[in-house]
Every structure is written in structure tokens, then in C-alpha cells.
Amino acid sequence: MSALRRVAALLLRSFSRLFLLLVRAASCLSWDPPTPGPPRDPLLLIPARVLAERIRKGELKSSVVVQAFISRIREVNPALNAVVCDRFEEALCEARAVDDLVASKAEDEATIEHKYPLLGVPVTVKEAFALQGMPQSSGLISRRELRSTTDAAVVSRLKAAGAIPLGVTNCSELCMWYESSNNVYGKTRNPYNSKHIVGGSSGGEGCILGAAGSVIGVGSDIGGSIRMPAFFNGIYGHKSTPGIVPNEGQFPNAHGSRVDLLCTGPMCRYAEDLLLVLKVMAGKNSEKLSLDQDVSLRNLRFFTMENDGGCLFVSPMDKELVQAQKQVVQHLETSLGVSVQPINIYNMRYSFQIWSAVMSLDGDQGESFTDLMSDGKRIWPSWELVKWIFGLSKHTIPAIGLAITENLANLNPQGRAKMVQKGKNLKEELNTLLGDDGVLIYPSHPKIAPRHHEPIAWPFNFAYTGIFNVLGVPVTQCPLGLSQAGLPLGIQIVSSQYNDHLTLAVAQHLEKAFGGWALPRNV
Image (cartoon, rainbow, N blue to C red; front, side, top):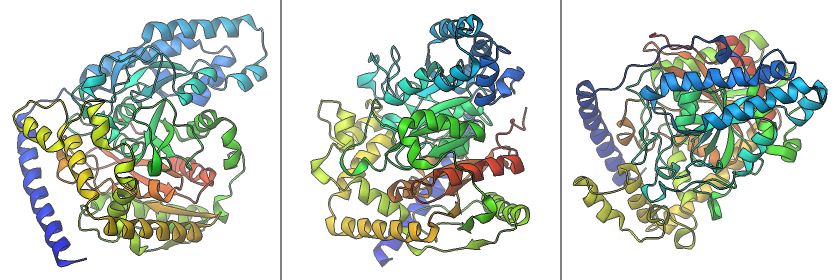
């Protein structure tokens, strides 16, 4: 690294430490609602696959299940602000229709399972996706009155499979920040501690799932927007191989070089539901993934990498996360009799720079973040920053900052080209390493769920997830219990392209060993 970059990194770290001190001081003076208590209704603790099975058999009524989740959302949402618009009455009507279908016995159980694998199961949807009759602002004030007249492709498939949407959940402004807070809906709070973030951009989705207000959900991921919220809220999330699940019907959608980075995928409280929901989301494309193939974990090759190699722009790994990863390695070696090989892939230390270079690859030819912010009306990011200082901007400071840095990225095309090439080399290296039988264990994030506003001090920490969007490989985020402070721990499981079934199988294995989603410890 050049001397100039080292100075810049050291200045950034100094600013980060000072900012964190200020944030933590302000946090002591600010008030957040008390963290909600645990779920009391046992229906809230059943995986979606089991709910669907019991509804098909007539052992449970969908209307009772849907009402249980509605009641839980009403209990926790005033404190968490996860669900930003609901359709409870419509959901109950749809649930009663499911009950009538099952009671009529017009079709046998096997036929119903084939046609409606998620029959009667409630689902929540990230607000960035079109859900008929619901808002789709993506946190942009200029879109706050917009209501969707159709369903996004993935929402349509879930409905066709019998799932019943309960409402839409909060996200960051234009889905490009890892705290879910915007000027349309405000901030969403962590169900394990309301003073902490839920991640982004699918943060409201991760939150309501972690709070047991939903059991399956829809998220999208261009830099970790499924996996970071899944990590911070103690649930499962899957970023599939690119091109498997349709992205149509979300705002903003990806264009140009970003198409291969954006992945729509499932977010679930239970690992066993990831496979079922992914099949529904992917449709016929699921045949490309060998999802029904049995996986012998003992025959897999396992690799582990404890950090990104030492990027100065990213904060050091939290010791509890390092220890949790070591426990995963130890468990795999003990339970499966495998040898987990430690590795150090040099170019991973450039994760943030590679992701940024690919995101800005289209330069002036593609739709910029500033264009999306303006929504048809031209804006100047630097002027928005001045307005924000005086409380006059309609945009959040992360969005303004991203618009400014986006313009700066285009000033060094040679440097960008160098990082793009590093990304290509890294992609080839990783796919060669993993082959069709390899799995990489990699940190989800360098920090356990930060307090509100702290991400501004460490804006590049998302690089731990973002790099895998560039590499185009499938990744499953797995919870690993709770930290000493009662916040979720977790890990990423990575495989090569089209080997999603490997990461999903490992996730189910780790769920049995580490308990998966955990009830909050402080209640």
C-alpha cells in the first residue's frame, strides 16, 4: 500500500475512534424503546415447512397461524419499527380461503403439496419489492406515496406457492447502506437489544424474523444486504448463485455491471426452510443447483479464513467472532472427521476496493446512485451535504456520502481497472480452490451488531460480504448463538458457483450443533 493510502487509512481510523466515542456518549443520553419480550405462542416457533405440512393435513388452520404472527407483529413492532406497512385484513381473508380449500378435500394432500408447497404460511417482504397495494419507496421521500399495482416476480411465485404476505419491511435509503434507517419510515431496532442496528439493506426483514414476527421472508443482496441483517438478527440468509432467482420488480434494480452482483433470496428463521423457499423463488432455475442431491459432509473439503488479510480501511475482527469461527472448525473436525485447512487468500484484503470498482464500472454510461436519489429531478450531492448540515435535505447522510464517493470513483479509471482485474483473478482462484466439493468458512462481518449510527465510523466493513457478490458465488449466513452481551454471532458458508446445495447442507448441520436462531438472553 502506498504511503498516501496508509496515511488516509490511519486518518480514517482516528476519525472512526473519535466518532465512536461521540456516538456512544450520545447513546447514553438517547432513549430507545425497551427490547420486546420473547414469543409466548408456540405456533411462532415452528418452521415454515412444518407449518405447511400441518396446514395441508388439517392439523392447523392457516387463519390461526396467520393471526398468531399478526399478534406478534403488533406486540413487537412499536418498539422495533420493522414492518412499515401491513395487509393484515387481506392476509386473514386469504388464510380463511386456505382453510376452506383444505376442508373441502377437493384435492388430496400430495396434490396440494405439489401445487402449494407453502400453503397458508405467512411471509414478509422487503419494502423494495413490489407487493400489490403496498408502498415501494425504498426509503426515498419522493416515492413515499407510490403504491404497487403488481407483484415482483419472486413475490408472485411465493403467492402462487400458497404463501400469505403480511406486509412490507424497512430498508435503508435506496438499499445501499448497512443500517436500515431512512427519512420515510425512520430507523429499525435490533430485537436482541434496541440500541443496536439490524443491518441493511434488508434490515426490517431480518429484524421481524429475528423477533419471531415472521418465519420466512424476501430479501435482496448486492453487497451483503441479506447476509448482514441475517447475521445481526440471528437468522439464516442465502445469497444464491447469480441469475437463479429473478430480480424483476424491485427498486432499485441492477443494470450493466451490477446485474451479476444483485441477488434476490430467502431469509428464514430456520435453516431447513432455506431450501424450500429457494426452490419456490428460483422456479425452474432450481434445477441448475442440484438442490435435491444428497450431500455427504464427510466427503467435502473444508477451508477457513479468519479475516480478510488486513485491510486498513476495515475494522479488526471482534475476538468473540474469531472464537466462534474456531468453534465451528473444531466441531466440523470432531463430528465429521475432516481436516479444515486454514488459508490466506492475499487479494481478499482488497475486497472493498474490488467491490467499489465493479460497482462503478459503467462510469457515466449507467444509472448512477445520484440519478436514483434524484428520481427524475437533478440534485448535487455536495449541495445536499450542506443542506443536511442545516437539517434541510430529504436524504440520509449515508446516501449523500455514497453519491459523493461515487463521483470520486470515476476520477481514477486506471486504478479502477486494476481492481477489476484483481477481482477477476480472485474469482478464478476461489472457484479453482473450492471446485465442486469445497466449502469456505469466512467471517460475516468484523463486528457484532453495532450501536445505531456506528456504521458511519466504519463504512467499509460490509466488504466481508460484498466481495462474494463480485465473485458470483453462493453464500449462506448461519447464526452461532449469542455473544456475552446477548447479541447474535454468526458465520458465512461459501461454495463455488451452482453448488448452493453444499452451503445449505452445512447450514443445516451447524443448526443442529449450535442451536440456530436463539431467543434473546436478556428477557
